[in-house]
Every structure is written in C-alpha cells, then in structure tokens.
Image (cartoon, rainbow, N blue to C red; front, side, top):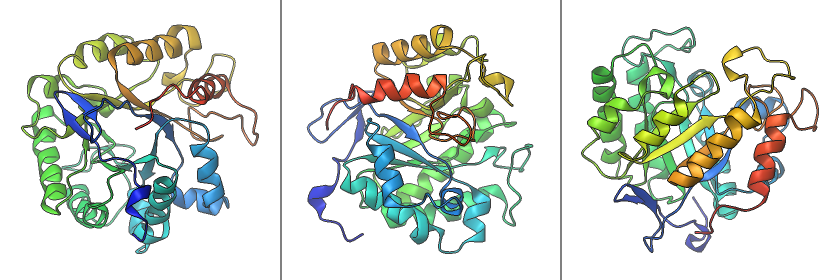
Length: 309
C-alpha cells in the first residue's frame, strides 16, 4: 500500500493478557461494524465519504464483514474493497478488523446460514487467509478475525481448525493480532479459558446479545482468564420492529450493564450495525433517524471515551 508509514496507527500486541501499543500502553478497542462492502457499493455508499462519516462517530476501530459468497463472486474483492477501506482507515488513524464472516461448521459446512460457495469452508478459509494476511502483513492497523461464528461444532474440532488458520496467517509473515472466536455462534469461550493457544498474540471473540441471560456473568469470568473482545453486540428495543427475537432488549437491562462491565474489565468491543437494515440497526428503516440502540451507542462513542494511541 502506497501510504506514508507515519500515517499508520501503532502496531498492537497482546502482553500479559491485555492489548498494548508500541509503548506498552494499554489500548481498548471500541468502534462500529458496517455492512458488507459489496452491498454498500450496490447502495452507492462505498466511498471515502461514507467511511469518514463512520470514523467521525468516534472510537478507534471498525469491523469489516467479508461474506464468502461476495468474495468468491468477485476475483478483485481484495483490491476493489478491502484495500481502499484499509487505506481510508490508515489515513484516519483507525484500526480495521477483517472478519471472515462464516456462520456454522468450518469442517463439514453444516449450518442454516452457511454460504452457497463452490469451495469447502476450511479450504476456502485457508486460501483466503493466505492471500489477505499476506497482502496486509506489513500494515500495523489491520487485525485478522479468522472466522465469525463457529457453530454446530465441538470445541476440540474447532480448536484444531482455528490453529490451522492461525498458522496459515503466521506463515505469511503477518505478526498482527489475530482474533479467534468461541463456539456456539461465538458465545462460548469456556474451552479457550481452560486451553488457550500457545501463541500470545491472540484475542478471543465473543458475541453477546440480550437472549444470553448469563452472558454478562460469563464475560466477567472469562475476561479474568484470557484476553477477550466482544466483536458483536447490540439490541432492539421492545418498542421497535424486530425480525430476530434474540436481539430484543433494552438500554437499562442490557445496554448499560454491558458497557459498564466492559469498561470495568477493560474489554474491547465492536457494536453492530451501522445500518438501517441489518439487525440490530442503529438507524430506522430508510432514515437517518437513530434507533434506541443507535442513540445509545453513538452518543457513547461521540464522547471520545476511548484513548488515543
């Protein structure tokens, strides 16, 4: 990438269970998740102005979901979409989480939300990370999230699959932080808490939504044992339409307690979605008017509570 090195955010690493910058100062990542890039392009939103609008909301990171179908259907996806996003983030001193957005079993393809692609998911994932990690290996503001939501898979099998993907990334020479999810749709981190990877530069991802009654308790416990990042969270108020019941919650019984816990434990997070369509949305349908969730989280980020790196 043809960007002055001085523009890059500092390289992050994990030391003694926390994310730190090059001065070994703790860094908490907080930010937003945007829709898939090809969809943004179809809506005439894939441009620098849109992403600068997202960056201006506050926080220090964005999460980019990469859908396997979109990737497979566009041989230039890396250069058409990911390269510009990373460049815009670099120029705005933001970190970028590149999320390979599978939902299901990486070994046998089971899962109602698994993509309709020609390549087996494990083969796809290995090939994907060889190319993407190799391309961005020298860009310190990029973070690799190997697989969005492992599901319908046992912990032992997933740990073996995850290790292969981590090894694939490291074999390219990429040394950035790698995010590894828990099982049960990235909710269950119990296996990693007892059996963390041998490599230290790993952060473990969980997704906690309002239907997870013990989610806060588990997050509290797990974050004492391993470095944790919540890469998806959010809610839909009871007063607003919801297609997915598991997202229905409120500011008082979910939003505020989640934020307070993550602040107290120093847990990094990404809120979804900066959108008016995908749930939980931050904006009302076909409108710039914010939902209850959007008002809550965007107001929080606008206060610049995150720390400069």
